[in-house]
Image 1: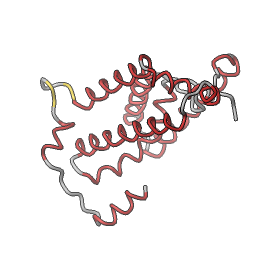
Image 2: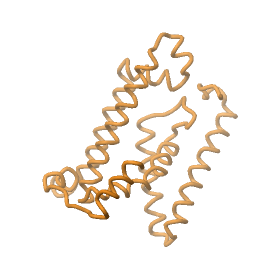
Image 3: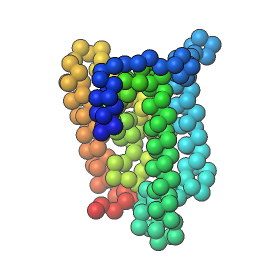
Length: 196
């Protein structure tokens, strides 16, 4: 947000065009049908699914997310692990920003991504990820993203104001979190992360 504010001030409201080659990153179609961002998304989801399920690094991430103290006792280097996870998260966020700017055709369009924060959280929660940690799957995140996109489209066509649409999204997230907590109480075995 700080960077966005300073960059907006420096640009003084200008919205420069991007190079044509950069626009091809997201606006090019394969066989006239498929959008490249969809291909990127599916490929990344598959890669991260394999990493989490088939590699030692993925097992460590899952263990640390389920119970950080137990992972530390088991000898997992949590500091380095967190550094790697945050680095990967930053890289994927940067790649998403490049694709977003490429699709919009202007670097100033990055400001529009502020609204995606609640949608990202909603997608994770709807996909079964537990906000307190301990549970989460790539396949669930993919399904949650599709559900969130469907909800977003339904709200867009409903005629509600943008403010009411955001309120509805927030209510959906709250309802999903309450449902998760209720499920954890009824089935305590699935709660691997001790409450703090």
